[in-house]
Length: 186
Ligand SMILES: CSCCC(=O)C(=O)O
Ligand SMILES: [Fe+2]
Ligand code: NI
Image 1: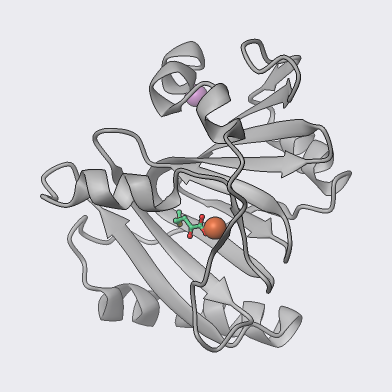
Image 2: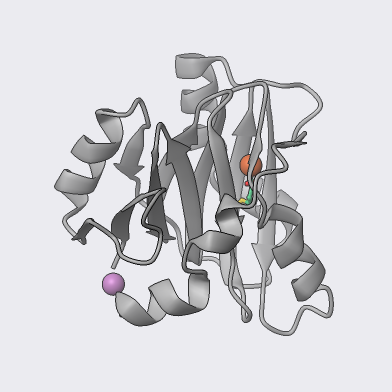
């Protein structure tokens, strides 16, 4: 199940709110300017190519582009047998921002997005079907865990695609990582 855990940054050990109610999750995130929706997905093999995935979701991608001005897209897909999984995990695991609006649409598996909003951190264990926005300037990080298994379509208003600005803050290391949150909310 998709789970939202909300932490005060001054008390990163214990979430003050934990919910698996998709409607509540959407409302709590909308209150903070984050879009969260559940979109239908298609049956595709775990090793489907980026091309196949973009083709299968061409209508959804076009709709989002028309609606919100997204210009580029890519696919990030990881499986536990990926020899570079640790490097990929590390790539996103520290707090960063993007200078443009982005969307993440999980079409397979799960992954944990942390959004640092004001003095709170919203940790969203995203699942297949979840679409979440990362508005420009939103401090965030992403933990795919030690055995990553997910496919995510990413949309960018930036023509260059994914460009990250790391904040240099250590907040990510003070919050529970994927392993504890997946455990706590299983
Ligand atoms: C699930 S997509 C990988 C993470 C990412 O793109 C990001 O943090 O910006
Ligand atoms: Fe990011
Ligand atoms: Ni669950």
